[in-house]
Image (tube, rainbow, N blue to C red; front, side, top):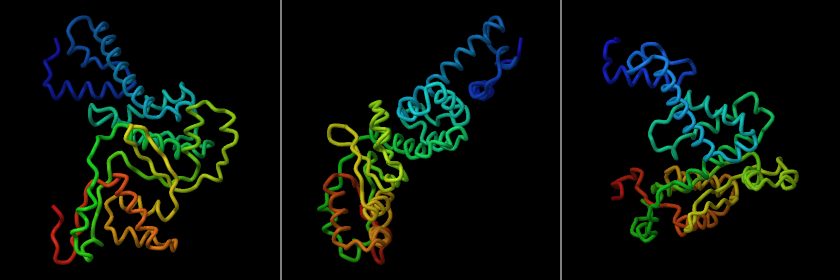
Length: 274
C-alpha cells in the first residue's frame, strides 16, 4: 500500500499528469483505490475529459480559425496549447487569448499570412461577447474639470470595446469564412486590408466592427489603454488631422458609451478624480 500523499502532493501529481501525454505514473495509480489497471483507465478518461473541455473552449472562441485550418489540425493544436498553457481559472470564456499568437506562429501555418489578424480579431470578438455590462461615463462629470486638469484625464474603456491594427482585411475574411462564402473569399484583396478597426457590443449584445482612420485608430487605442488625453491627442495628430476632428472622435466615444470611467494622471496641484 503506497503511503498516503498530502493534498498538495496529490494535486501536483494530478496537475502534471493532466498536462502530459504519458500514461499515469505508478505512484499516482497506487494512490487510487482498486486495481491499478482500472485506476489508470479512469485517470485517462479524466484527462481526456479535461483536454476535451479546453479544446472545446478554444473551438468556441476561434470558429473561423478552426474552419480555415481544418477541424483535425485545429483540435491537435488546441490540445497541444492546452498542455502548454492551461487556464488560470475555471471561467473558460477568458481562456485562450495567447492561442492566437501560438497557432499563427506554427511553421505549418506560415503560408496563411492573414491568420494572425484573423485569430486576434476572433479573440476580440470573444471578449466583446462575454464582457460584463458596465454603465457608461456621464460626460457631464468632465465639465467640472479645470482646463489644465482636462489634459491629464485618463479613461477606462468599456470591457467590450477594443481596437486592432490590421495588416489584412480580417473582418471581411471572418465574415465570409463563417458564412462559408467561397465566392466572397475569392474576391477578397489581401493587400487592401491594412488599417484600424473598432470592435464593440451593441445594446442587443451583437458584435459590431467598423473601420477607423489611422489617426482615430491610434487615438482610440491610446484612450482605451488609459493614456493621458493630451498624450493620446498628440500621438494621433501625427497625420495632421485637425484637432476638432480628433475631439469629435472623443465625443463619439463618450456618446456611444465606450468610456466608463476616468481619473487624473497626477496633474500639477491636483488629486485623482474620485
